[in-house]
Image 1 (cartoon, rainbow, N blue to C red):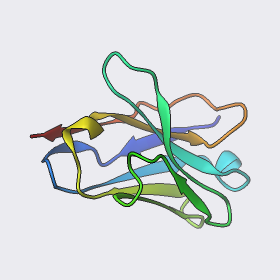
Image 2 (cartoon, rainbow, N blue to C red):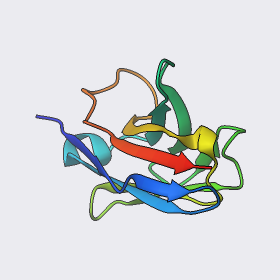
Image 3 (spheres, rainbow, N blue to C red):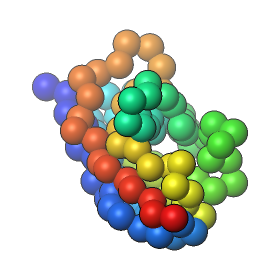
Image 4 (cartoon, rainbow, N blue to C red):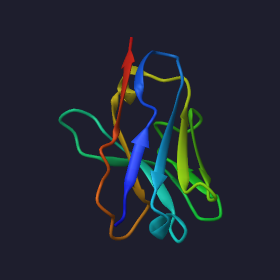
Length: 115
């Protein structure tokens, strides 16, 4: 069964950094691009950053220059390094495939940025 397990969230002050991790089942990780999504309270979940199998990346404008997505194919893990965090980055962060039919969501990891 496909599983996604996110971790690394927390409470930090504005301007701080966090590094999120997502461990994915090998069955999806090895053949797919992956993405980080976030969902703020009362808002829809949306795609923040993506990375292809070969390491090409893409970012939403609101996080470009502050967030860095990476992956370790040997560990079936995708990361999101978040720097210069802002209160508007507060959300639950999830990982999943970057396109197509998504797999069941993990529990996500809460990121809270205080001003």
